[in-house]
Image (cartoon, rainbow, N blue to C red; front, side, top):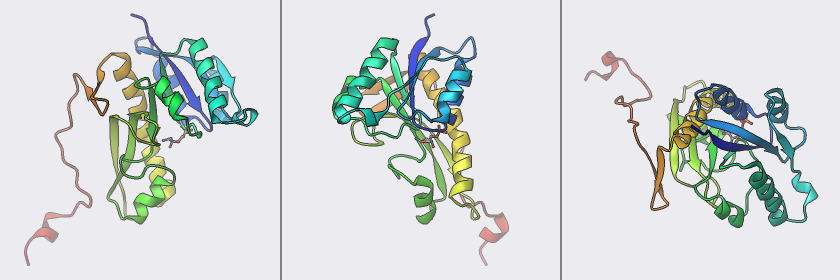
Length: 225
Ligand code: GRF
């Protein structure tokens, strides 16, 4: 069966790109990467892509008069590559509503929080400051408003009392590297549909039975005095 053609957009270190490269390296994975685009020529992710033998393009936003012109160049490169799905993986440019509309239901993003909590930047600092007991990450379809759109997959990560933003980010990143390839696989297998433009439904998957609590306390300390 033909593999889904995915293009990955990056701006930086590309660890999520790497997780997608690694997944696509399996012969039985249902997607392949046809192009990696970076707006930043120095992005380490470009090195990862080249090492994997993938086609790369640098489209530097500074070379364009405005966002619309930059997005038109992105669109042109994506179409030329034959991409059927766009995966944003640490792509640090806001996309115009027109571009998002062109790729509606065909563009996904990974975000380091349990959306709709903490859209935007500094998600881990904000989760810690709010005293959250869980952090996590989300893969979602992209709508024009930043970090919104039908959710495909999430992973919850328990926050420890001694966490700082660095330790928490590291554990969330591990979870990102699991759910992004999983979401790509689900889409490529045709198992993701979007209901009324709002909710994504996955066929042939189930929710875990367990309910997680944080903190975990021993039975003794819960006993009545
Ligand atoms: C990740 O935390 C991702 O969730 C966010 O940007 C970061 C990119 O990291 N959108 P990397 O470039 O994939 O290592």
